[in-house]
Length: 247
Image (cartoon, rainbow, N blue to C red):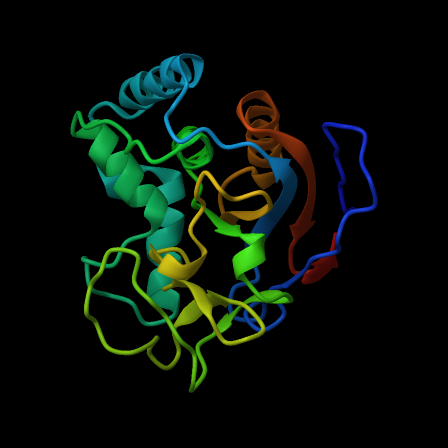
């Protein structure tokens, strides 16, 4: 059942469509929560209260997974299997959540970007699920998780010079104009739709592939957005029996 939650009295929101129809046969365990949030006020620096929350989640992750091999952590193992499912075998290509967990277990802190990015990274770490967010005013709906196509474009947020676009057979997250918002499903985000302090509307995806509670993660995320960035949020879940939603 599609779930819609609002944190403030709302005007009629602009509908956003998201689809996993192209990949659901190959990945039937895929479940993705999408959160659309509007009227944001994003602090460029992490507020003190959010900083304390992030520090707490880092410490909780270290305690929870102390002594564990990355491959033994369920949320990481699920995505390693998914990557193999679309032909990604190189160890340099790992899901975004694996990189977060690995860094935190190595004693490093989550990156400081802005309040919105920092809080969704905290959700990703705690829930052990990949999350990705894009500025809705910099994408062209409808959005879809699908296989790469000829003509898709990608600008690497890390400045890496690796070809001009995704490889054939690669799962990507893309908009209707062929802009690849994230390569290799949830490996690296496009630079053109990054969340910034000027962002007023955002779309966030919370992704599971056989392990993880995307509903709980979405509730966690929307609570933190309301607490630290204001705005109004609504959510829905895509899965094999409902591979397309409009919210």
